[in-house]
Image (cartoon, rainbow, N blue to C red; front, side):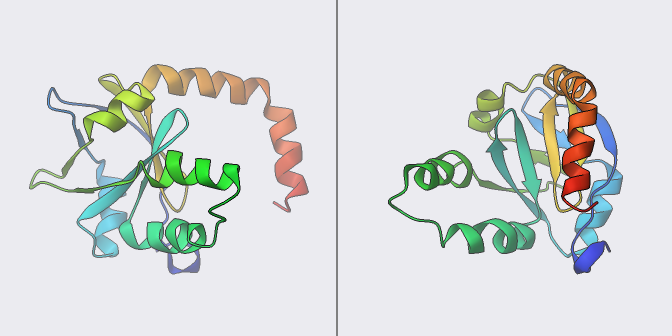
Length: 154
C-alpha cells in the first residue's frame, strides 16, 4: 500500500493493444489494484494520454472535487466536458485485460505500441511515439521542472 493508504503505481511498462483494443495490465499494476479489491478501472482522456484510476480513487480525487466546480465558469465547464465526460469504467476480463473504448483510443491516437507509466495514485496510458516525444520535452525542460518541484517543497 502506498502513501495515505491509497494505491501507489510506480514504474513503466511497454505493452501492446490487441486487434480488438484490449490491453493487458502489467502484473505490478494489477497487484496494486487487487490489494484494493477492484476489478475495474476508470479511464479518462487527459490531453495526449489516458489516465487510469481505481474507481474509489477516481471518486475521491476527481468526482468529489469536480462536483464543487462552477457550472458557469467556461474553464470549469470545459474541464468537465473534456475530462469527466470522457471517463469510462472498464472491467477486467479473465485474462487481466481491459477493453479501451474506441472513442478514447481515437481521441488520444493510441496505436498498438503503448507505454504505461505509474504516477502514484493512477497510471497513464500513452501511445509509445507520443510518450517518446513527451520524454524528450521533459528532458529538454529538466532544469525548469526540477526548480518547480523544489518550489513545491519536494
